[in-house]
Length: 79
Image (tube, rainbow, N blue to C red; front, top):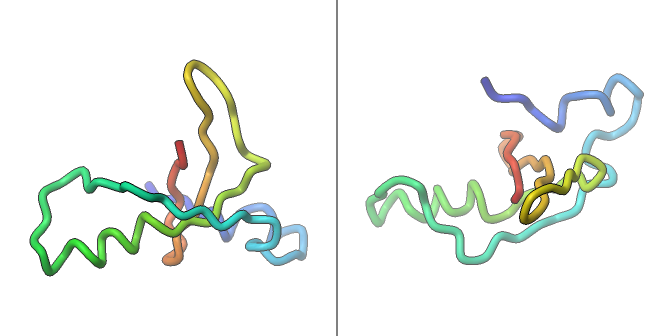
């Protein structure tokens, strides 16, 4: 199940869902699956530029996790 972070609570409050999100660029991202050379650029674009919602950040153990959304509106966890 995919949750669209950009379409949750903020819209019901009557404000732009992208306001207050931080642009996060992920460097050194490695795909979890083997990809062909023609598929790799598209896959990297999907996960290297994210919009993070710092209000959802949680700390614990060795780090923190924040909800984020990519340009296609897919919700992801930014660790």
